[in-house]
Amino acid sequence: MTELFLLFLSSIFVHNILLSRFLGCCPFMGVSSKLKTAQGMGAAVVFVIVLASCMTWLTYNFLLVPLHLEYLYTMSFILVIAALVQFVELALKKLNPVLYKSLGIFLPLITTNCAVLGVAVLNMNENYGLVAALVNAFGSSLGFLLAISLMAGIRERIESNEGIPECLKGLPMALITAGLMSIAFMGFNGIIK
Amino acid sequence: MNIMDVMINPLILMGVMGGVFGVLLAIASIVFRVQQDERIGLIRAALPGANCGGCGFPGCDGYASGVVNDGVAVNKCSVGGEVVAKKIAAIMGVDAGESVPMRAFLKCKGTHEASPRNLIYDGINDCRSAAMIPGGSPNACPFGCIGLGTCVSVCKFGALSMGSDGLPKVDVDKCVACGACVANCPKGIFTLVPKAADVIVACNSHWKGPLVRKVCSAGCIGCGICAKICPVQAIEIQNDLAVIDQGKCIKCGKCAAKCPAKCIKTGESGQAPELEQTA
Image 1: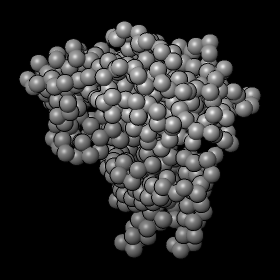
Image 2: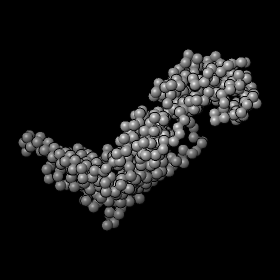
Image 3: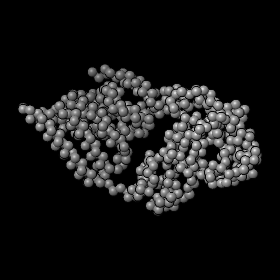
Image 4: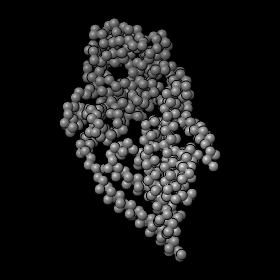
């Protein structure tokens, strides 16, 4: 139990998927200019990563391992994730239009997000059991939500700051901010042994 | 394990997985089908399909669903104008409302002759880039047209062309008032005016008279003669720049005739006879 809790904490802070594993950086830059859209994206990522990790874990352990085709994991994971996201989108549209609307455009965008595939592959590499894999997935995606929300909050404040030189406005400043945030998150290193 | 197993197992696995997912998705798309409001399709068909974004939506599809789902006004399409507004109104069963046909207007007369260039700009051939140099413009007048033709390149309707005098020309018949030039001009020189408007101040400078004189011979010096002479008090000097209230203007043309800088443009709409220029 303690181990799972530590895994959960470390996947949020120490091994933050955005700021220390550097996965899923595209939405980190692309959809972090407004806090609200960033949170929408983050929520969608939590949703998809947990579901996808569950499915890919089952695929790997009950399909690829028995058939000795472990080396096909990249292809089959992508296939599973893409189909899963499409399916979830169709189902949500019908069954829960409110949730569908709030996740909106982000759901199909995440299909090809490397963070999703990354967590699935990490789970496989670390030989996690199903519960540990799910905890890791939930923690990692919460870390994504945390990082992208922080980033969006900072960027909103940067936008309204007049003092920034013209040549640094927008993306350059965002990149510098991301670098500083990443350094700050390095401070979590070593709190969990 | 022989070579066939190595080849065939993965093929079967991926094939079966792909096939199963395909079938599942096909079934899901039937089971979870959502009825779309058929009016969205009808409105989309009625729209011109220019996808210019003049209505404030990402494109014609966005506007169509905006009208049906969010109750957006039916007369937002400036490309289609009144005709399309009436069609959409008929589909939605509402009143089209008034929509005044608009067009883009260039608030600058700073030709190569009238307004000298301060320096030779040799950077990226785009006004938005040229506007970033110190001073805000390669021209002597920081309010005026830079003349690199960014507006011409963003106009999707071919309504703008670069004149030999260094200023873009608006083709009033082709202009649909989508607002692309207004949004992309770094100097904000373009404005949308009613197509019927015929007496408009063609200057954007908020500098005081003597300064304007130094940089441009056709700039508004804020002298206020036009405001005094106007029989219907339609002109006001705001921030050293004359502004004509198009709602009050009776198109008499007296202001244009008396303007010492000749910065009031007349007769551009093509709907009024050429005004007499009695200077």
